[in-house]
Image (cartoon, one colour):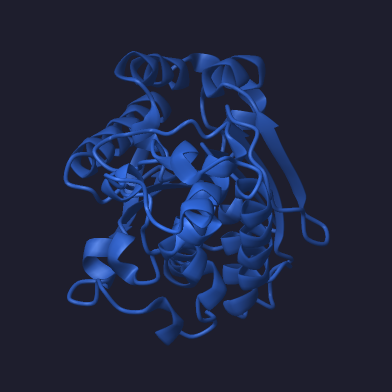
Amino acid sequence: MYDLCEKLLEINKDFIKSINDEPSIEVLQNLRFDYNNIPDYSEPLCQQIYLMRYMYAYSFEFYYVYRLVFETLYELYKATHVLSIGCGSAYDYWALKKAYMDSNLEDTTGVFYYIGIDKVNWLYTCASEKYDKVDILKRDFVEWIRENPNDFSNRDFIFFPKSIGEFSEEYFKTLLLEIKQPQNRLKRDRVVIIGSFRKTQSSHQSDVNRFESFVDTLVSANGYIKQEKQSSDRVFRGDNNRYIYEYNHFPIFPKSVKDTLVNLDVCCNRYIKNGHHCSPCECEESLVFRNPVTTTSCIDFKIVVFKRGEQ
């Protein structure tokens, strides 16, 4: 499987090459991810900035989630079917495979059938490992489920990787109605539902409420009981701002990538030409210069295991 830091270095190299072709870094001013701003992820520069800032921390979070699932919550089948809704570059698949490899599950075959759905054509997507089958589809989720009810119904894991809050209210209501349809009834006796949430004050509670609505809809539509739960509040209580490299199996964030993010002015042709920032420095005011997330500060998730029958 690919090396996470090498992938970040690749993205960094491509970003520097692309931004050097721009008149200035002014093009980055609207790439804000705070206060419910949802940037245009179809823009390659936006994707690259996003991945350099968040891919490392989110990959660790998703890895940690799957370690919890494999080691404490779930007995793997010979083949496990995963659905990632709003998958982006599908580094949650990378996290899934790394968690499996690090969990010492020698008694299982560890074959995964991963379907990732996203409306945006993301760069730097993960390739399948060994016997896995990975399909990363540029699709609208509701349209996909209407055309592929059997694929939805046969999932063992359903995952929202920081994505559940990015749907409009109207669209999310349509999504809930769709998963209640008889043809979309889940067929597994046990299913794991995972939600990873944005942690900003303006979006966190909304993300959690949506996840709970999704879970409750599946429970009522499928006759499940909630067998087990887990959340970041339990496992990271009092340890929510630790450097990720302090945990086993995770490398140190590449310094050159951090240097690029906090010193974007050296990539700005206007700055290079004039020898100083524009006045006023609108790029600085628009939060262009930001550190990558390299601590556990963004970790926020819930895991629910469904089971049919008596508890």
